[in-house]
Image (cartoon, rainbow, N blue to C red; front, side):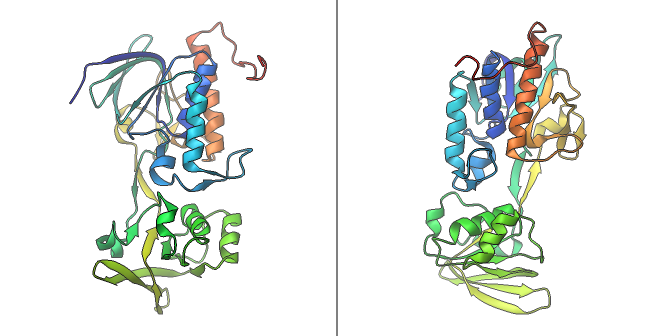
Length: 328
């Protein structure tokens, strides 16, 4: 069902992940009315869609926090300025008038915004498949963890060598019967501190090794066969396999907006402006020389973007807004 609803706003934020949610707070802090759109049906972006129970450890002043709790805090922070949410809808097209960007959503909603800030991350993620295990998807194989307690007491095989694989090995080892971590290379790509915790735990590591078969009885997974790069095979018990092999991302309709792209990212300047008028980008979607893709970096970028948006919309304002503590 489509609608012909029109929404007018100062700022349209495309992407309701952590960067977008902090952007909604910061826009309100600068006195801007904000509307947030996201293709997912809930706020939180990939954090809520892929790892709501995983511990986030790279945000300043928060040693560790579950993804869902982190998102809830961001939503609460933004709520003080009452942003409007249009969730479960995708931004399809953009047109420009003299003083507005007109964005069409896939349900027919038209958003007329004085500025647009893109915070949609790396786009819509599709997990890289574990080809030998696709027949077990939904029963003995999954690509992310939404509830760690589902794996309590299980023999787990985790496949991958990046942060997600290491994080899940670290988080699930205390509650699983056993954890086996399999990586097709010798060197892991994840954080060194997490790797050290995994190495110091009871987790069994198999490097230079791949999963070649999953097998079981009566629809229940019972074992996994591993093969090393020199051909040696090992059979390990397994109630479940978690394939943390990364994701293939798609920018979707944004690719056709006329944005200057760098691969799957959007080029921005130091003010987070794109090549389109009054369209900005922040977070993992944006790219510039020296870019580091961290959540904490995204928070700084979206604050930079919103400060420049405020001045672009009202040149009498100053770029520096003062501190949130000034009125306390």
